[in-house]
Amino acid sequence: MLNPDSALNSVSSYVYGTTRLGDESIPFDDRVAIAKEAINNGVWIHTSDQYGEALKVLNHAIRESRVPNQFFKVGWESVDQIRQSMISQLETIGLGEMTVGQLCLGGGLAAAFRDGDDAAFELNELKSEGRVDSFVLEVFPWISHVPYEALSKGHASKLIDALIFYLNPLQRFVTNELWDLIVKQQFPVVAMRTVCGGDIRSLVSRDNYIGGRAREVRPLFDRSGCSTWTEFCVRFVKGFPFVLTTVGSTARGENLNEFLSIRLEDVEPLPADIHEELLALQRKWSDEVDRHAEPWTM
Image 1 (cartoon, rainbow, N blue to C red):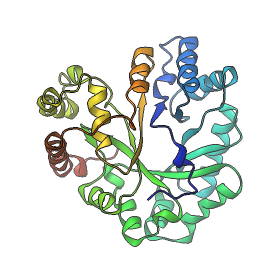
Image 2: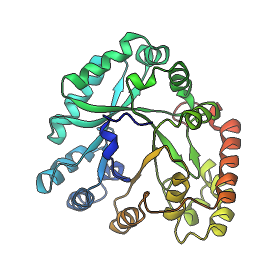
Image 3: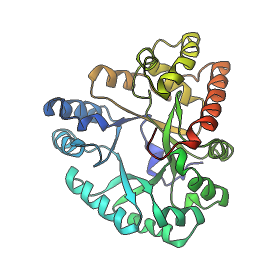
């Protein structure tokens, strides 16, 4: 259940991911234009100073349009590091406060959150300082034990309002144990990487784990009756009532329009048999591959 005071209660059903805004091979003005289009359509944005020139592009877009609600990635191992990450990014983009801080916890701070130690909850001071409204926690398979322990012990919601991780038909980047606990508790989730970086027709040709999974999922897509891969992906996450929104990145106007037109609140979940077959595949992939992956190798 989402905290009634959380800023996430008003999150848009699609969040514009800004990874591609950092791509300097795309003309700067073109990147500003698509950022403005997303902002003017009322969607939230997801950004980070890790995305090249993304904050610079957004600074221009905001000055020429309006201020959107935002997710910022912030980290790492101390409250002061996270505070400085916030200050630096807000100054670059030209804002005074961020809507949601996506906590990328490491070291002792991750351990403190896992164990429920006061050191982790000192992060709430950043809310009192007016730097951020809400926090979500970034999760990958190799750090799933941290939120698993925090959720099991019942103290996760003292700091965070939701978990955020890759969740699409080809990626469910939490371990099976954590996923089962999320489902049991109906703990809120922000689903990242809506379409897994492409279209099913191109993903099947990749010579990596994504390509192998796409080849397994392609028959399910063909049976689903969905007209596009985007529709299939959005309808997949619609099958989880605890998913608040989905985050997808693009620098192409036609792709942005497709994201905007397929609204999470309007679609129906995938047919039950296809949804269950996807869940079974994801359990297999998690046990066979994801849980054994070295950090940042997937």
